Image (cartoon, rainbow, N blue to C red; front, side, top):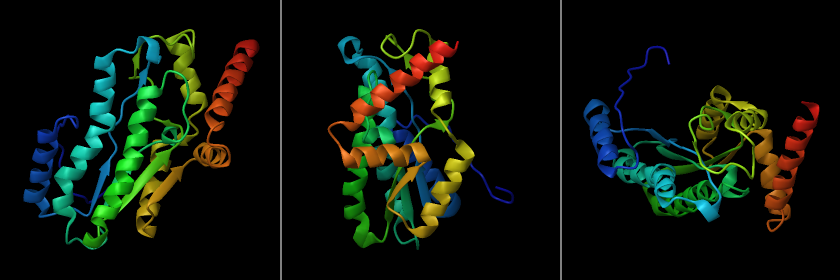
Length: 229
């Protein structure tokens, strides 16, 4: 943003002390904050049968505990600021699941539930909590994912990356703009992308079947791509 004062600090969001240090730096620089966005996230592709606990803890430390640590560190700085809002980035995968994504699904579902409870805790303080459920966003998350046994979903890392790109219709810039608009409207829940809205509708329509429908759709697209090649 042109004309803005920017401070950067390297943090491991899985370490509570790193987020507390970041919050203290923000307090010293600005005296408080108006909006905090807990956005850090990583991906892991591994079936439950061969899941490594260290991988699972790595993902949970970032995707779930990073949100908790961010809230604990910054809520004191949000108090007393008009329109103050905490934004927690969950995923449409909080509602829809697919093979090899069990830990990612669990972490994002945890963010959703955590946000719902935190919103009620902060209501009297006048701090809003916006929980964001993006669909496919074109970032480097798949490229930088930890890939273990991917045989259930792809034959190679290159194919897996292409699948992600094929199912990521929204740019990061467009996603950011949608979040800013939701903040201005004071929303508490946000779906990003037509894919997220369709999957949310499927989950509401048939919560016990939506994940199976989605998995079959992904497999159909994979077979179609293979036939075209």
